[in-house]
Amino acid sequence: ICALNGLAAAAGAAGGLDAIARLVKVTCFVASDPSFTGQAQVANGASEFLIEVLGEAGRHARSAVGMAVLPLDTPVEVELIAEVAA
Image (cartoon, rainbow, N blue to C red):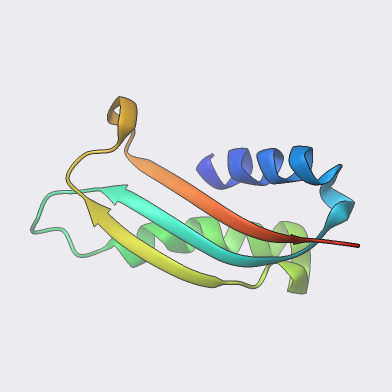
C-alpha cells in the first residue's frame, strides 16, 4: 500500500504514470524492534510491486532502514525518487 501511494503521488506530481521515465531510488523505513533484522524482506514487497507496474523503468537502487517509530505510528513508510520524462 505504501508503494502504491508513493507511486500515485509521483505520478500526480509528474503529470501521469506515463511521465515517469524511471525510478531512481526507493527508501523503505520499517518500524521495528531492535532485534528485528528483516527490513530488507519487508522492502522486497514494495520493490517487486514497482517493478511489476513499471517494468524495467521500475528497477531502482534501494535502502531498507529500521526505525524505532514512524509518524502517526505507521508500520512502514516508502520514499520514491523518480526521473520524469522530458
